[in-house]
Amino acid sequence: MRPANSSTASWLAAAAFAAAMAISAGCLAAESAPDSENGRYSMTPIPEGVLRLDTRTGTVSTCTKSSAGWACYAVPDERAALDAEIGRLQAEVETLKGRLAAGPTVSGKIDEALPKTDPLKKAEPQAREPKAAEGERRIEIPLPSDQDVDRVMSFLERAWRRLIDMANRVQKDVSGKI
Image (cartoon, rainbow, N blue to C red; front, side, top):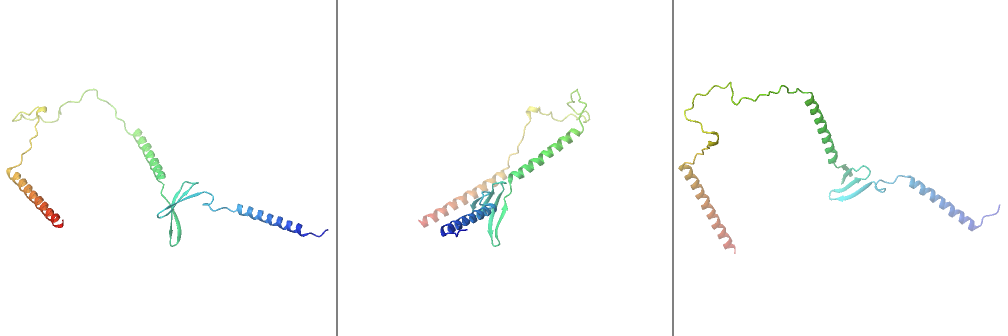
């Protein structure tokens, strides 16, 4: 065998270094990268902390920092709650339809018209005054007495005097400050 010269040795060392780098790069690529680096989560700053969107599942979480560290809590999903309520209502409708279909049916329609008067009701004796016809009914509203009108007038007088006194006081306050 021939002795190796320095250029061959440096070339072999460079090749060995390159192979070692290639192997280590492959090992690093095999390790899973954190989820935030491969695009799974989208982060948006909010006043309370960070809003995190999981792009795979669509789950939204709020992340806040406390004395113990960061904690993320899922935001309630309105859509899931609405879908659950819709499902519950649809099941209830089906149950009620089943009860209605199984319930008793009405039969035996009467072809003749119902009587206009009640045959079981006692006949009324002749009224002392004739009844007014249906179209001539009157509604009587009692008028207030003189005492009621006097009470309203005295209330309005007191309210008016208070309003005038208040306006005078405001005018004096404003003119004194100017």
